Image 1 (cartoon, rainbow, N blue to C red):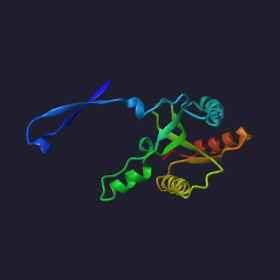
Image 2 (cartoon, helix red, strand yellow):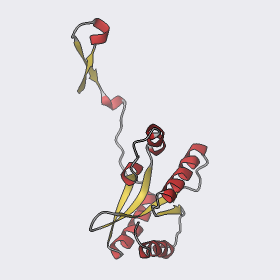
Image 3 (tube, rainbow, N blue to C red):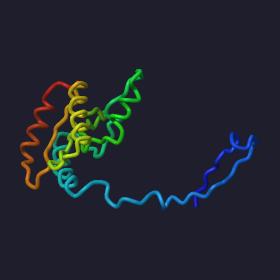
Length: 160
């Protein structure tokens, strides 16, 4: 059982503290899988490409790990826009972990306007910051050679 100390100074005007029991089982449950089976299928194929080009393949990378939010008047807005956003796969250099290519899987069945707006935000943000982003539509059958060609073309360009 976990405990949380609640400071009641403001309520009672004294230095009293109360100990409340918190049962986290009511608020959380464990996830059994970190990625979906579809993502796993793409991961296995992308991992082969990563090994071929001497790269490391990371999965479920937070936007916060890819972009740095500047200290500005609009920092809270920027933080909100990036909140809970992840990129499905990120290729980085083995020698210095420099970001080379980000890969985002697009679910063709998304109709939620908020999710579509966030998807567009990521596209625009990565374009402005000159971060290589490959968007792949999730399908049962896909051509890994086409994906590898896109990756090869990006890797042949000079790094930002």
